[in-house]
Image 1 (tube, helix red, strand yellow):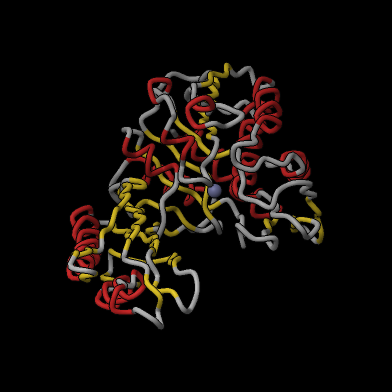
Image 2 (spheres, rainbow, N blue to C red; image 1 turned 120 degrees about the horizontal axis):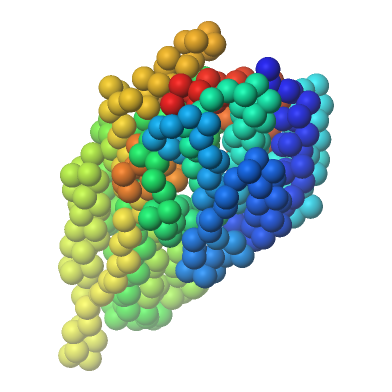
Amino acid sequence: MINSQRISAEFARQAAIASPSFKEAAIAKYLKKRFADFGATIEEDNAAHEIGSQSNNMVIRIPGTKPGEPFLLSGHMDTVGPAEGVEPVLEDGVFRSAGNTILGADDKSGLAEIIEALEVLREQKIDHVPLEIVITVCEEVGLLGAKHLDFSLITARQGVALDTTGIDHVIHKAPAANRFKVEIIGQEAHAGVVPENGISAIQIAARAIAQMQLGRVDEETTANIGVIKGGQATNIIPRMVVLEGEVRSHNPEKLQKQTQKMIALLEEEVSKARVTVDGVQIKATMSIELRDDYPAMHVDLQANILQLISSAAEAIDFPIVIKAAGGGSDANIFNKNGVETVIIGTGMNKVHSVEEEVRVADMVQIARLLVEIISRA
Ligand SMILES: [Zn+2]
């Protein structure tokens, strides 16, 4: 049913087109042409202009051969780097890059699986509801494409995103995340001559961080300070430190609470840091940029979309596990905008590295599952 040579060729063609985030023009052109072949109408939003990318998000509509609610399929066309000059190499049924770049199986394996499923639906004359295929740009740089997607173009209320590693699981739950950048300003002074005139920004940061609960805070929540930069020389009391951190949680209240705790510790240590020079009191200060990075997603285990996938998987005797993820993806944004979306593994592995790989047999398996899901939607 699935043509393994066809899906393999499809993947190789896409993988050979470099498409790092913001530079998606070539892959967008290819995809438009490819989907037009299925009698699709293709609409674009205005995301390119809004986020400074070469391309817009694409909404591809495949007319149904039977009436029913439209069903959403989704993936992203951008990749992480290094991607320039990517050359897919197929060896013993496994695609890898030639070595110096990523492969781009994240997420081109997903796109190839969608296209192969469409080929099979057409070839086997399998009836299906109207399909809305949403392919975003700039997923790898903070879900920028999805965040700027014009959701008025989307009428589907449920669907699947093909965008996670492995092949044997479905993601129904992912955390929300906050990110912050804090700049602490102390007072510069010669460390050997007049240290009493200085306020060490590094020490303020250190005191605050030492009191923070980081790592796995509880079963639903994680926290991290991932970047710290500051200071100029060993003989200068450092005036400035910049910290970058994040909190993730499946629980929105815990997300806010943990974020506020970390910020409060920084504020407290900053407020305590002061020095008097020539009768003038100098206080440390801080500024903060706090961003809610993405909302949580939580598709109920009883939701229709999960039952649909489970029954499709059962029908082809392909066991899948429903589980939670530790990070956000486009599906978080889709769910927030009223499209109940779960994420299916595409077979990609070792993503975001030059060792990235995907097995043809796994793409075949997922395309098969996809055909079954679509035919039951
Ligand atoms: Zn991805």
